[in-house]
Image 1 (cartoon, rainbow, N blue to C red):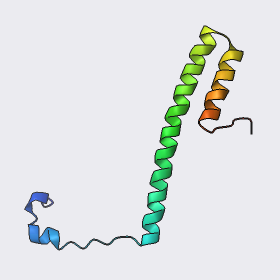
Image 2 (cartoon, rainbow, N blue to C red; image 1 turned 90 degrees about the vertical axis):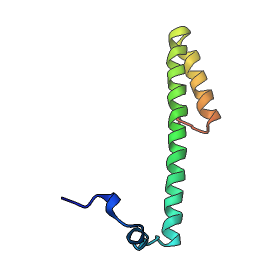
Image 3 (cartoon, rainbow, N blue to C red; image 1 turned 135 degrees about the horizontal axis):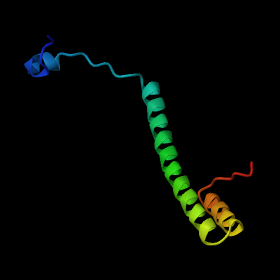
Image 4 (cartoon, helix red, strand yellow; image 1 turned 180 degrees about the vertical axis):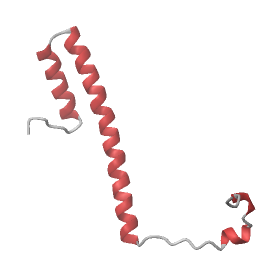
Length: 82
């Protein structure tokens, strides 16, 4: 069986080499993480707009709901007419 992680001495643990990626690689990773977070937040916003848009369609009519959805999308910087 394998060694239990708690059986590693502090000295052995401190002697494990750790290599950091190059600065350019770290910057790329940082950019990707930020882009991912932004996309996730935008996805949440779009989901809320869509849910509220469906509710407005049910409560009023499609034209009013569509106008509201387009207004909300414009407010978050999304244009679906392209």
